[in-house]
Amino acid sequence: MTAHNGISLWDASAQEPDYHAPMEADTTVDVAIVGGGFTGLSTALHCAEVGLSAHVLEARHIGYGCSGRNVGLVNAGIWLPPKQVRERLGPSFGSRFLKTFGDGPDMVFSLIEKHQIRCEVTKTGTIHAAHSPKGFKDLEGRWKEWNAMGEPVDLVNRDEVAKLIGSDAFHGGLVDHRAGTVNPMGYCRGLARAALGAGAKISTGVTVGALRKDCDLWKVETDKGVVTAKHVVLGTNAYTDTLWPNLKRVFTMIHYFQLATKPLGPDAAHILAGRQGLWDTGQIMFSLRRDAHDRLIIGSMGKVVGDATSGLSHRWARKQLARVFPDLTGIEFEEAWHGQIAMTPDHLPRIYNLDDNLYTAIGYNGRGITTGTIFGKSMAGLLTGMAPEDLPLPITKMSTVPSAPIMSRLYETAFTANQVLKSI
Image 1: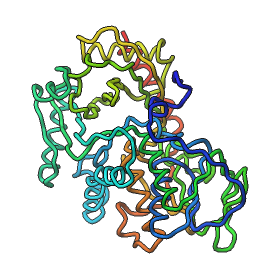
Image 2 (image 1 turned 30 degrees about the vertical axis):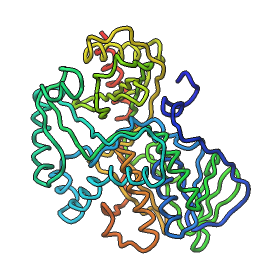
Image 3 (image 1 turned 60 degrees about the vertical axis):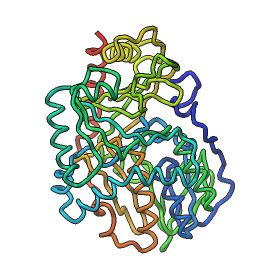
């Protein structure tokens, strides 16, 4: 998938060291956490900080799922505009959700600062770019709502967004000054380092095969032994498997792919000069950012078809960069990868109480960095006496999406067709 035999560019370029540790014996803890991504590691860190013993069980390695394949945009809020959030969650939860997720980037940046996480962090905002006049009208409506709430979000016209992006291909944009970018694998590994420093345990290469209740405790059965815990948190999101019945059917899984150029040096200095991350208003989303080494990372929905140097996705990426930056020539790509996203029907995440003392936060809709970090802290609060009504959103009953497998295949067909169409 990549030239470095890793899962993404971020896996190869992260400054924070990887962490590997086998599970050596059966153990007993307060909280067993399945999944070593943003959610699991944030849960472990915040649990350890309030005095709970926590053990993270990761089947592969830290950040193997979408945490290490992420675009790296530290965005505030979610896909939905504020009005729709309030309509779907009600005035109390809706307002709390908007406040919590609006402050999400600051929470991430504070953790990065506190633990000195080396993850190429920028705090210069993100740009939601209008791909069409209709897209700009939608952004104008969103801006009015955020502006009425006093949030630092600016609506910029076509000329202004062209200066920020270094391209006149867009029709305006929404600049969110709360947001920024990171190397997501660097952030993920930094959370692991912080969790270990706080006293949590992390075991990698450990596959959880079953969850079994034993009186008021859980037996987490793995291929390396048994973890006995009072509480269990599943932090697997889009990489959820069959561990808990039907859990992987509460969302529609889609893929998101990215390609990274070789470092462009001074030739890229005018592109996203402030190093803001960008995504557009297109129905099949397009993303773009420039990393600390002056690579351009371009992405969209779907799988990598081919690799970094040849094939459909390579042709798509070359065509899109030529469209947005016609003066760039001689572009070569060095990395290509994709990850999985858990999309819910209403674009809101979920917190499920699956059984006594068994919880999961799931369905992040492509906003994993802030969402996973926030829910990790929420899980720690819930396990130490936080009232459920004080969570960012209500605990709900698990509800499957019967059409999810069919929709995943239909989306994949549409996304591949989009690559073909935009490669011509």
